[in-house]
Image 1 (cartoon, rainbow, N blue to C red):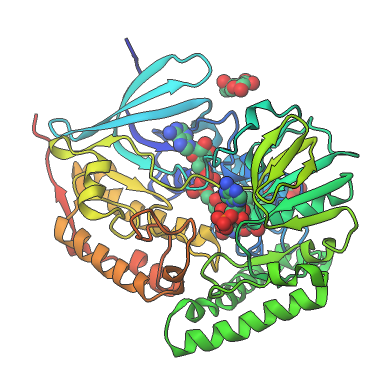
Image 2 (spheres, rainbow, N blue to C red):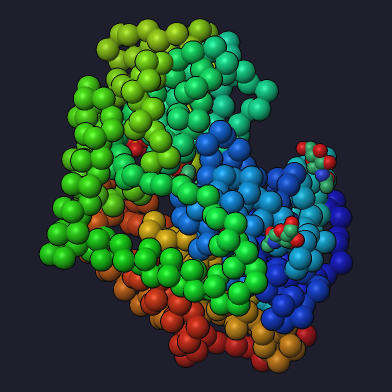
Length: 498
Ligand SMILES: Cc1cc2nc3c(=O)[nH]c(=O)nc-3n(C[C@H](O)[C@H](O)[C@H](O)COP(=O)(O)OP(=O)(O)OC[C@H]3O[C@@H](n4cnc5c(N)ncnc54)[C@H](O)[C@@H]3O)c2cc1C
Ligand SMILES: NC(=O)c1ccc[n+]([C@@H]2O[C@H](COP(=O)([O-])OP(=O)(O)OC[C@H]3O[C@@H](n4cnc5c(N)ncnc54)[C@H](OP(=O)(O)O)[C@@H]3O)[C@@H](O)[C@H]2O)c1
Ligand SMILES: *[C@@H]1O[C@H](CO)[C@@H](O)[C@H](O)[C@H]1NC(C)=O
Ligand SMILES: *[C@@H]1O[C@H](CO)[C@@H](O)[C@H](O)[C@H]1NC(C)=O
């Protein structure tokens, strides 16, 4: 039934930063042109295409939220808006000719490892027409991201609502906010950015909290034209700024540890946040805005003007949960009715399980493998029964304190090193040894037990209590381990069994 596509050497799934950077490096470092990137959305960009809500911006300085091999002198602000990041990624895709390799509107549905041919049989489908395809490749790389699928709204009555209901990652640009009563559910990074951005337009903004967050003051200066000029014309200036920023961000790593120093640093940070609240927000909200859990347990929120905007007469915050949605109002647990024309779901993403439909050696699936291992992947990127399969920004790759792109590039560096012999025809498959994978999993989960993230409920922690999201060590360690990998952990098979 499925149409057979000609074999290709590498298939990458996902055209966000991870997929685009992976493609660029295959070309740059290995000279490979025979690869395809499949992307389910109608546009490249991943996160930065999906999130178009007002106020959406990076919260890691752009000088470091950019790719090391494609430095960008063009960012206008320290923390630029989402469209600048998207434009940058589009530029990278063009410059490195990655755009020609991207097939949009195409979903990756399954991958099956074939031991006889040492290749992956990949099932794909066109999301518009439903047409199915199959393609074989030597190497399969998942770059499918983690914050992709919006958390569905399960509040009773939502389907009866008369106005638009939109998740922050599915913004409806035709929804009118002017002079409307807007309900915002959630107060993570997305909720904190969207509220001040719409407060000036809406008649009223009613925001609903579930858990408090720690807020930190943040300035967002323009990048001065002289500095931009220096970025372009004085060699080394951009690199020096990047290096400086990297090290500055790294200084908050010790705060996540549960030792005495960590506790001391958290106490200082808690005071900074609480003082900022008292200095900036109306007194009636202080209690709501000063959490009781450890600082850093949930991602810290760098405030783009949220606390200040709570002083507006038309912005209202409550922790009284919505229990029912009616066509033109929402009703809370305490029985209050709030008028509603638009509902914004800033409720985050479904991060519960990895959506990877892969079948490896001896017919084992990723889900079965993770049941045995409790999730995770060796060095965030590989699993023993899945040869020639890699994940960019995989389990435990993310870090809350610095640019995710650093982890993306570290993984890509390791993957390039591992697949080089295969793409050069010197070997046919590579996989991580089972005992190395197991030991890594034990080490990482052991370290994570001694981090602050174990002390509260967040989307980092699975239903079974494991943290398969965050990297517990410093970025220096991550860099070192990717740059100088322990090659004893890997087995290559030399020839194909025909
Ligand atoms: C609003 C927001 C702000 C953020 N800000 C920051 C920040 O300031 N700093 C920071 O470090 N990080 C930030 N992040 C995290 C951000 O997700 C990463 O920095 C980075 O963009 C991830 O890139 P990625 O390519 O790995 O994943 P994504 O950008 O999520 O891209 C994955 C792509 O894979 C596609 N895909 C998924 N499954 C399939 C499939 N089965 N078939 C085909 N295609 C598929 C998706 O459609 C998507 O386009 C933010 C995240 C969000 C949501
Ligand atoms: N650059 C940036 O500044 C930026 C911007 C946006 C996102 N991000 C990244 O994206 C990640 C996700 O951020 P996000 O803000 O989209 O999601 P999030 O951090 O998961 O926050 C979701 C919010 O919605 C609340 N919520 C979820 N379901 C709810 C329900 N049924 N009823 C009431 N409240 C509910 C959550 O409350 P609980 O806390 O109680 O669960 C939380 O306040 C962040 O961690 C960050 O890495 C970064
Ligand atoms: C992808 O789908 C969108 C509709 O969602 C369509 O507008 C666009 O032309 C399609 N792109 C490609 C390359 O097929
Ligand atoms: C920066 O802007 C210049 C001029 O518009 C453009 O030529 C260049 O490609 C841009 N660089 C990046 C990395 O976006």
